[in-house]
Image 1 (cartoon, rainbow, N blue to C red):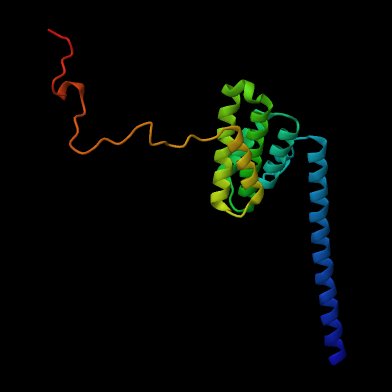
Image 2: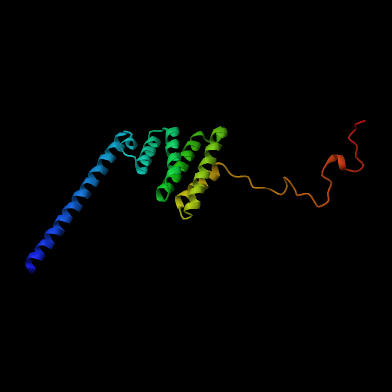
Length: 179
């Protein structure tokens, strides 16, 4: 009796192991098929509706120099994801903007400056989520070198002293030359 229950327990364990191995084999096969689609340049996100598929699509668009398409894909992902995938999206979006800004260079500041600002925004948002992201810190520093931020100086607009005259019309002993 004891031998029979032990053999049925072993048989059940083997059956569960075979089922788990079959399921993992199916998942591995699906992942390989998806990777082949991504490598071939086919729109893999159309075959699977997961955020990871959308991320792979955005990476593929960026790799094929489709800046506008990649930005749209990353922006859509940034609205619909969170956690580590959101961090990867923000980092890649910042990199995409920074690469595009560096292509224009300093001679075309009108085109590169807005892109550098967009990259700084992406990196800062990522650093708010994960302050220890060193790659984002480094790239933010590069973007700041490309487009430094103005610091408010005291010489530009000094504060008015209390009880001071604020308008020309209230100044004493001064005429505007009007009749």
